[in-house]
Length: 139
Image (cartoon, rainbow, N blue to C red; front, side, top):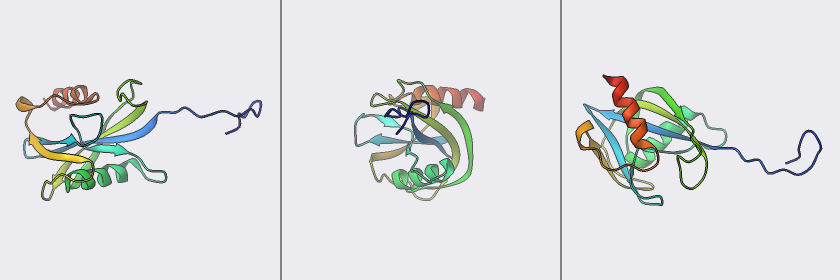
């Protein structure tokens, strides 16, 4: 890529756009156990593809990782701390939706399971912070 000021070659260094989804079923939320590094339990989600809306990416990632369709999809917050993903800088727009269908792990999810506020496992990335914000706003 050429710099617009001096035409020198530059490599763009922008955060990678991602989505995470808080999928509600009854009074619980869906978490996946990741197959790939970094390991751990996490909200379903992933990278937004070029030419794809964030809403479409959220629905696609939910379907791929949990087998669920989403209804009542709405934006929650965006989280963009540079260290939130140990691999590289990501900026994640988090959505909330109701899950419909049969919950089953797929794609890069080793397991998909329902959890309540009181039985959350240790979470990857900054997902503990995201869920703390979510549960705080739900009160």
